[in-house]
Image (cartoon, rainbow, N blue to C red; front, side, top):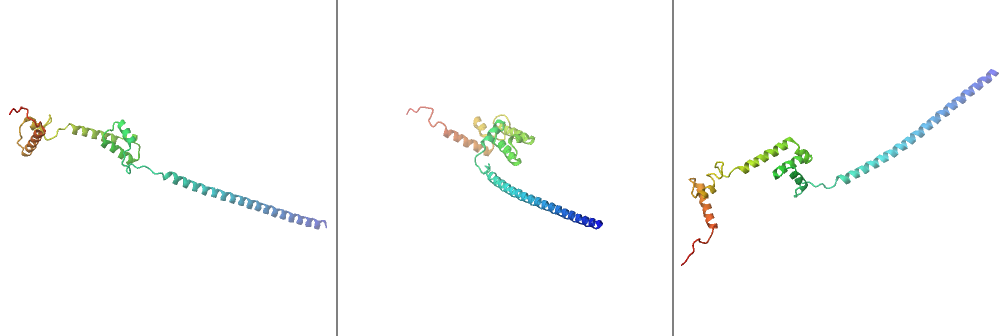
Length: 192
């Protein structure tokens, strides 16, 4: 009988252990379910915070990116600060200033960077020498050395008319204009 009792006790112990393991499993499942619910709740909160932050970022971008920008192409006024800067750097001629400003707007770089570029420096130097050469040239087709024979002033000073018909007409017209605009009173006194 003891053996029978031992068998019953063993089987009851086994049942108790099975029940305990089932309870432990259920506790584990409950813990896992609770953790899953907690994680799910935290994820919802994080998602809501992320959406709120995205909305605030979108508002910030629209608020600060839509400021009216002054565009020089829309304004008739030149940018005096840029012109003054270019003047201090020795870029005095309006054509040269336009070249530098156009290049700066094309490349979207500051003027200091543009002035440091070799191709801009050579272009500015070329323009300067070309302007100096044109300023030194005489008007007309004559040789270098004052006024040429194709110049009206030359023939007025000489007091003659040239052989070229067209130039002669210009010289005569200039002589008439000079006499008409001169003194309208006689140098000699009339004593009647």
